[in-house]
Image 1 (tube, one colour):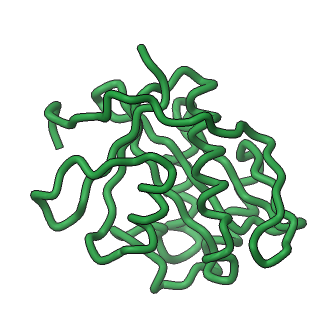
Image 2 (image 1 turned 90 degrees about the horizontal axis):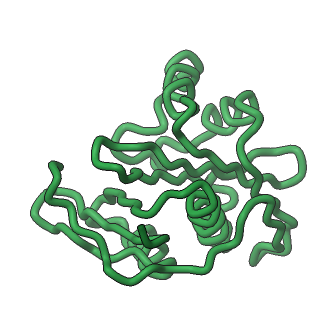
Image 3 (image 1 turned 90 degrees about the vertical axis):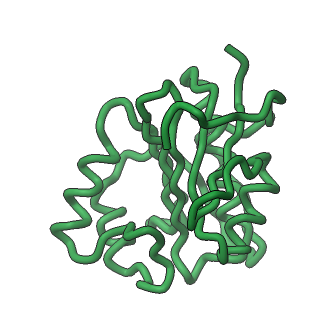
Length: 176
């Protein structure tokens, strides 16, 4: 989408910043940290259920996963990982666009979904983004993905564009 993307006027938050530890709804101890271990993510994405893929990501196959991670780990991107013990169970990223804003993507392993990890992971990424001076974040989500839409709305995202196959949502996390 071009430069006509709109953002809420109100700033959302406050959000936690990494490292952020919490107990999920299934009683598991989870820690969200700034991403520092790509190998753990390769393993997580190799185990990812194809049903949980959206818009072609994460890609399938180790080589494709590694090439994709190379792109989302470029210097200007922000990444956080949710850890359950030694295992990466969630990953969220902010990738800059050409309009001084950032696109968000989030993935949680199926075995760890519906336990509050996505909410904490998303909020911690937004807190990290605000710390790094990011003001505006957007995402696209498939229209039928009610659990994801509910998660994004709970955190403060608003639906901004309904004209395409996917919904576009946006949030303001800081004032300029």
